[in-house]
Length: 526
Image (cartoon, rainbow, N blue to C red):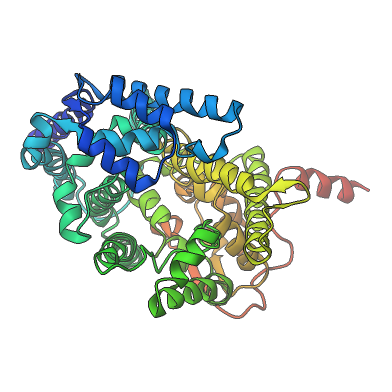
């Protein structure tokens, strides 16, 4: 079995190396017909940009996309700078440089990857999947009887901020930076999934389709690992199956199929304020212009976010969404499971968490309010602040950097719920309901607790579960996502996830933390 695991790891690494190397393979040539077609579709009036590209880029063969991207972005920036100085605003191209560059580079790609998409799909995704499964599945035999143990998580270089963990951290962060800001550098990777995209939506793949497919693939492979690891716990098996279903069906397949029928791309399980651009004017107009189904999507999204979510949180806590439905939570629970013990349990982290996540929620509410004000009044600013600027900075800082680069890239160094714990505005919104008006709680039996610490170790939200368990105190925290792993790893059955009457949910003599303990000692001395 160990030989199979080593062979699987080797195949996975080979697939990963080939996947990464595709960024540096291929040739690129922008044809005049491709460029003319793109200019007409975009309605560009920038003669300087068009002339520069036609003279210096069109027809030229590039050995890599980096040089082609540099020439395109330089031409765009030079032309825009000139027109802005002359205040010819109608000729300025407002597209992001690397986004425009991607649209021209992808149809310009030539060479071995473009001509052999199926082969390279197997050499990357195929070897990666086969290798990962060969590494994971033998654990059924090697682990012995079902159950959770320490399993060396604090000795492994991969799961305790060792050099393997830091390599994974660097790789993930680098990938997200390329995905969000330099998509023109990864066009060969996008070509790998072109056939799949065309079969679903009828359109060529974009970097976001690549991400969606990769997202689902990783969740399935690591979901199998979850099934094996937590096979003794029915709750974990069912909720893992649930997040896989909702991610693959509602976040990936259904939206792509809707596009094939000329309907808006729409994820029915997504909700504001996590889906922060739901109330943006372009989205509202797009949904309204799509007829009856589009209007239903708009109404459904509004009712789902404002009415349905808090009602269900009241009865079942935020776990129904964060641990059973949400794609962000799904990736955290599957890909991020090996890193869950890295979540900071300190008082300092808890204070940062509370201030930061609620600040993001306030930011989202203000931005949305200004967006709706702009939409209904036609005014583009309020109190001297432009709505577009607020949308841009939220999208850049929260939508890209926080939720993507940090939220997932930092799994190997900060644990698997970085975004959910410190940044997700929807988690903050549901957390407020859960903390003050909900029937959900985790009950504890202090008499059975042996203080092994498994519960606190594996809490991905940084909650010191053992402190509650030792006192037999109900766990009622805004941050708890009800993943149930604390209960699954408890050797004595001390912890239970329950939905019951509100009375008695928050008990007297609550668990005291940090400075609160010092304060109580002072009062007692007096």
